[in-house]
Image (cartoon, rainbow, N blue to C red; front, side, top):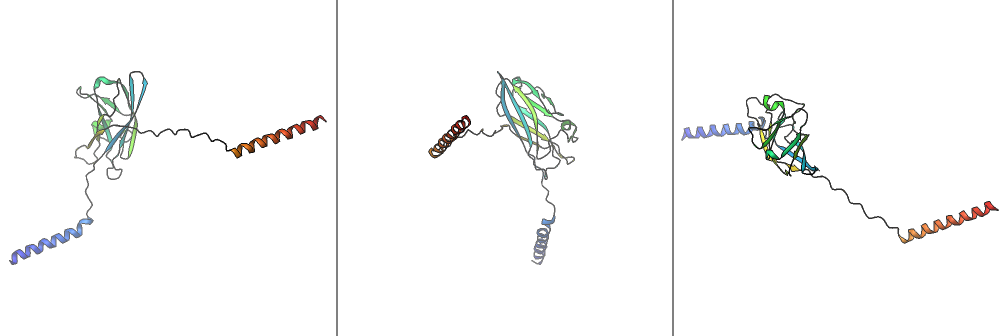
Length: 206
């Protein structure tokens, strides 16, 4: 019984020490990077739909510092794509003949940071323009990130593109109609001006 008591006592002491010291240890939280891709759809030419994409690295600028977004993959039938334009520093490829479109920066393959082209946490990049021969609508996407911690796996995130919400154009308000009193004052004023004008003309003739 004494041995059991001693063990319980030691366990309680250790538990108390852990409870006291735990708040002083830095919290180890694995980065969970996130992203969003929005687009503006236009129909500049008959039979062609143009999609202007903006890629957002919505990861936390502090907790996910260094987790730069450096690769985007959009999934759609390859035959529907008729043309594209990418931001400076980004390249593209179809992988293994599959129906998705990969855009990436040099750091996507080399693993070296590219601050001029990668999308840092809390920022966005526009200039991804894709032309389709039919309406693409919302597309599934996957993005990849740099991992600043050596030896750890490359983070990724999946989602669906969404249409940008443009603010509505305000409708013109009703044209103000003068009140009766205002009309009377205006008429009286014009009448007086006309009367004074005639008197002036008569004096000048005299």
